[in-house]
Amino acid sequence: MIVNEEFLGKLRNYFSLNLYEVKIWTALLSRGTATAGELSDIANVPRSRSYDVLESLEKKGFVIMKFGKPIKYYAVPPEEVISRVKKNLRKETEKQIKKIENAASGEILKELNMLHSQGVELVEPPERSGSLKGRHNLYNHFEFLMKGAERTVTIVSTAQELIRISESIKEVLESVAKRGVKIRIATSLGKSVQKAVNNLKGIAEIREMKGIMARFIVIDGRELTFMLHNDEDVHPSFDVGIWVNTEFFASALENLFELAWREMKPLKVKAEK
Image (cartoon, rainbow, N blue to C red):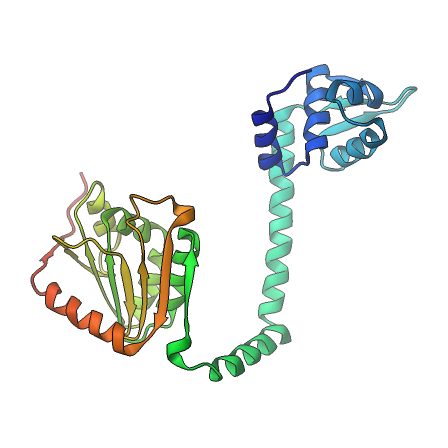
């Protein structure tokens, strides 16, 4: 049996299986039922490993062992396999969440916070800086900084980034706004930007930015995170941001933003058709 290597790679990724497991599984699917020896020959997997692999697949719910001589294995229908994998993932996720929740409510969190607070006291504010790679990490960092905002959150973004922000971190922005923090966003016009404006209604004031292409966030005129690339030109995995804790630079940038903000045209919420 010849199975495309790219297809095997997808199966490994989707179902978290190793190479021998996907080879044995696809071989069994092509036969419906077979012995370990037969599957070893079809899948080109060493016989010494085929029994271990089949045992692993059985535990994961991919195959059923049929008693008899010789022992044969039956392929569980793919739809049922997907259902079982989803169910097992939910159980495992719930288990891991409970572990984290237990850690967050116990002595472990207290000790971790103590270590962190003691460590931070040793670091001068200007030294609190770093680079973040990957858009997922960047947005997680945005959330972290915004949660600590006390006065202002200033955002300059592209239209596409505003759409992502309105979808991915809206809840955080909403909770920050409820605390009385002033949120201002300057963005360029683009496709679907009106949807983002409507989505952030009552949370942030949004104005149209012309002639400027930039991506940065300033928190309380103190902490600054700026992105090095236009998000339209870089894959999300390779997006890069620089975070600096420097009141001198951040407040200067916010003051320049203030001057530009006065000339910007407000983007109004429109009734959806």
